[in-house]
Length: 138
Image (cartoon, rainbow, N blue to C red; front, side, top):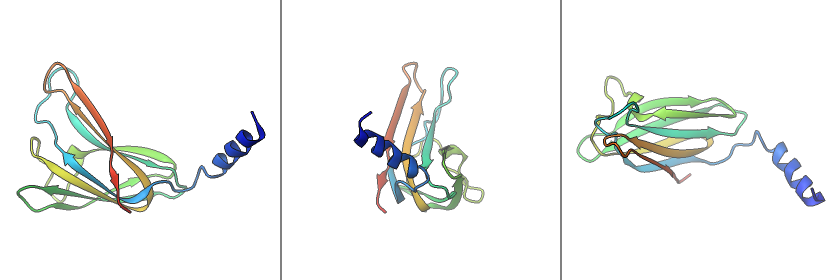
């Protein structure tokens, strides 16, 4: 290892507990497939990485084309951990996201985090797995 590589690796190690990412994320394309085939269940997940030494508190809002948003959903991602939040598990009071209905998501965090979005569609034998980065705004 060259001296520059050693210095870079040491600097990266010192910053392991630093918060990385943004505090506001947008995912405009949500859709929970209404059925599954085979042994895997169709689902979507908000995938969050918290590199900070502080727990992240997420506030999630779901927007629809034809109805009022679902608000007030809170999730925690412990310090220096990752969490995969299944969108079908999100609740706002007694309401949840209906399968087969398009929606969009905003994620607001008290500290910077990284947000990725994944969908597994098993509605046909040739299943599809999609994963994209959310759009950071803050």
